Image 1: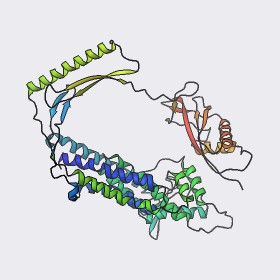
Image 2: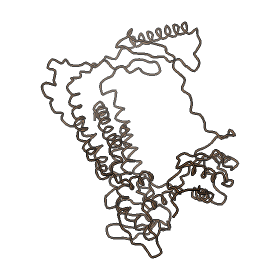
Image 3: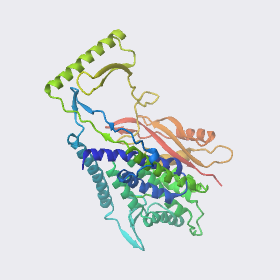
Image 4: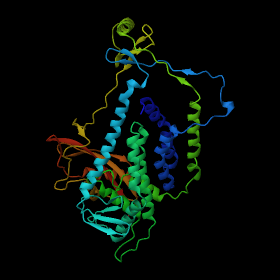
Length: 489
């Protein structure tokens, strides 16, 4: 493969893939056309990779300038560091390292995918299994959350679900299995490896996973489930919120699984409650977008680009080039010193800019003053302790490790405000100091002023924690917890 062809091809995938992703993100993400969104996300990398390779059509005669001259590219000079010696090489011979870097990136991405598949195999190969029509159930015993991969559903029988709830969760996971969502994930993982220098290739998979969850939620939410005599009907959205909250304290799992307690819980609940009909005109946006991308590609091909190869200078010319740049830099620094009186302006630093010419004597050296970037402030407690977002050993309630007991204790301390009860989720943060005390409590996502105040009061009633530890020392650690409120009957 030619290095220049590889660079041009990878660069040409940026515009189509970024445009298709923006169409989904801005126009289609909150529409209930989940199957259409799934197809768009799966086809986006294929279209982006294929469009630059298609033969471009000829444009109408009125768009073509018959006397348009060919355009010559200016010479490209790459200064060698640190001596800033210009090395001219536009040909592909000096760019073979690009192919090696690209191949290494592809290899690392595929190796990461193979490692995830191996980890999943190691973690699940000894699980007891039960064959059922069209799929297999593997019982995890709490080692993995309820999830799916391929035609296997990993079932956490320790979750304590009522029969009707278990039916809804099973239908959700069956939707993943029957619609082939694991193959979708593998498809985009492979494209992410091929297009790894393209940043948009890494944004498609999270959006596809959300679409998978919305498709499975749609299948489960519209399934009538029979109730046992002792059961009460629980909305599917409430079940989703409860299990997602419980899953917040679970361990990590391989990225290849399709877990029921996947992220985007708030978005999934909002989409379940969204009854707005699909606005079909948004789906048709893809056609003019693709047409515009194809037109831009054909229009750009009209210019005949003739690269100009600058010969590599010999040793004497390189020395003359360096001497000329050094002389001009010295003159620029002296002029800057005379202009400023030899003193730096507060909050600025000196920056040397070298614009290389086509041959010695044509370089331009300038000195400018640029602001010194300020470092991000370190988060500390009111008493000056450094606050960690994560520690080797996280703080915990005495004898009750994990996040779930903390959330339950907050709910036990919570006193409902007077007036009508509200329903919704509140996110609150607080810090557990190195002494185990709770401080700096605040609301991150509000529900109502009365509920926010009551929640802060409940957090202040938390008992002293077993402090977190980092490198064997007690440290302050920050928490952010989601609290779900339901309307009382």
